[in-house]
Length: 449
Ligand SMILES: *[C@@H]1O[C@H](CO)[C@@H](O)[C@H](O)[C@H]1NC(C)=O
Ligand SMILES: *[C@@H]1O[C@H](CO)[C@@H](O)[C@H](O)[C@H]1NC(C)=O
Ligand SMILES: *[C@@H]1O[C@H](CO)[C@@H](O)[C@H](O)[C@H]1NC(C)=O
Image 1 (cartoon, rainbow, N blue to C red):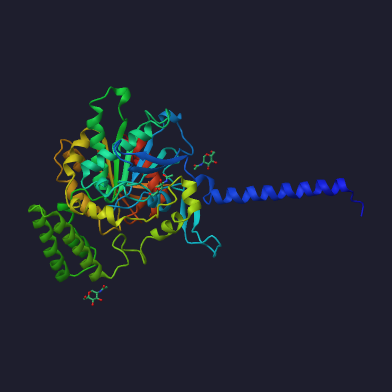
Image 2 (cartoon, rainbow, N blue to C red):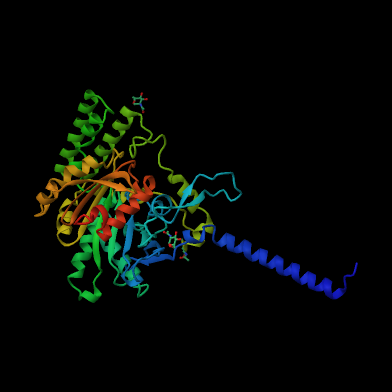
């Protein structure tokens, strides 16, 4: 062998270097157990009240392919429902850039696989997920009393968090802002939307929050109307018989009476009883989608977010034990569930635009239940909305659903989807939100020919 000491020594240096590179590679793999695009552009905690340490956790994903300069690129805020569920469900199971799927083969790190989402809502818009209210997901409730018990308190915290977010970077400040969310966010979205409009009245335009619209997916907004629709909806879908319909109607009427008496907790429990009966009669795997053989796989999100490496990658406090939904927060808002915010939507729709969309297969917060309250809205534009054409909506030539738009109010029914619309119809939901924001396609006021 011709090897000399010099060669050998540099060889050793080389292997050492390789080894160090390998170590570095390992560490960066660990630090980003998430694909680079699944890592937020920015994330962390937003204080909600200067007198406490409670804070709302957020993840922000900048637009992937913005079609306008960033300071003019719309920002969407996403709020999960529950009450008490984490917007990380939205982030990692529904509309974020990457989504969890069952591991293809057993892997050593025991994490679900992540797959690129072709229908991510941050294609041309910035997207912010807020764990709302404090106590949910990675958000911090520094003491139990900090957890809101009504929509006004929810809105005050959200306003502080949103203001805090917009001040993080000058590029955020004046971007057109849209508040979106699902399910119980049918209460949160109107509450924060209207709170912003009210606050804006005290500030010069340059200091206002540039709210442009709100969107609610499969929302609970006017419970007293919505709770009365389950029996008929299931019956006319062929899921229950007439006798079962009668039994459900009896419990629904009880819920209405309790609401009228202001017995909010009992009213919430009675609504739950309607769902228990409906589950029992139908034997469905989930009322969130009557076509599904198993519930939505939120456990995959839990598996992902209980990993310390993932928490580190997201900038979340590693000592927080992640759960998809918080029982404590749900309990705090138990008495709020059956309170209507329809009157807030009536105020909002005058000053901002509103989109209500529902996946057709949902039996909890169904399209039927939303139509039932919308047609009772007290608003100058309601006749125009109700008389507007219900358009057949297609995405890339395929039937996607139906859209009705009258003035500032739009309604969309999404085919092939249950309660979590972006989880079931990601590309169509992306087309929907983009067209609604930009007022193009089926949401254009004048059809482009
Ligand atoms: C963004 O644009 C590039 C270049 O046109 C394209 O390759 C890429 O697929 C686009 N990404 C998304 C998310 O649309
Ligand atoms: C419905 O309730 C009855 C009586 O409690 C029970 O025997 C039955 O197994 C339940 N069915 C389902 C599908 O849960
Ligand atoms: C994380 O949470 C724990 C427990 O709530 C708290 O004591 C700690 O200060 C937090 N760490 C950071 C970095 O915020």
